[in-house]
Length: 210
Image (cartoon, rainbow, N blue to C red; front, side, top):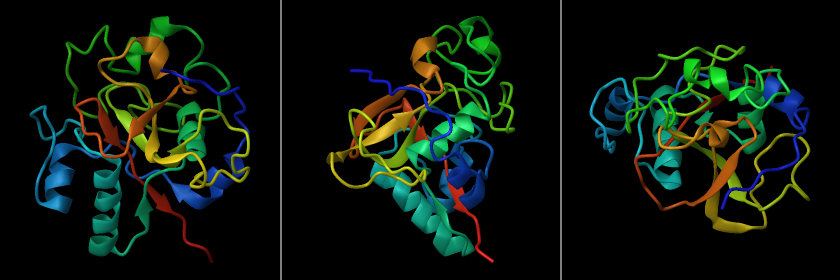
C-alpha cells in the first residue's frame, strides 16, 4: 500500500543542508559494490548500473565497510534528508515541476525503462546536481517505517524509535513503477531483509564539525 505524508518541504531542511554531503551524486553502481564488498548482488548486468537486490541490512553493511576503508563517515540518509535532496529547493511534485510529461528526461520508470535498470547519471540531474532521485531504483533510508509523521523528529534526523523496526522506508520509485510513484513525496515500506531488483540505495557523508 502506498502512503503519502502532507508536504512540508521545510522539515529538516537546515539539518540536511548543514550535516551531510551528497556524495556520490549517484546511487552506487555495480563496480562500486565489487570494489567495496568484493562481490555484487545485482540481477542486471553492467558495471555502471545501480546496485540493486540489496536489503536494508546490506546497504548498512556497505556504509560500514566504506567507513572502514576510507575513514569517512558514510551512512544512509534519513527520510527527511532524502526528500530535501530530491526536492532540491522545489515545492512541486517533482524536482522539475508538477507535470509528469517531463519525467522521461529525468527518470527511468515503467514507461521508458524497457523493464530494466539503466546506467546511473544518464538522465538530467535535479537542481542540486543529483541524478536518478526519481526512478531507476528505490532507495533505502535509515528510518523505521511509520504510517504518518505524527511524532517524527523535527531536526531532519532519522526516526528510529517506535513503529516496526523490521520495516524501513523506501523512496524515489523504480524502473518498474509508473511516474506517480516517482514523486518527491512518495514513500513505501519494505521489510529490511527483502532483496529484489527494484531496490538499491544512496549514501551520504556526514559533514565534519569544526
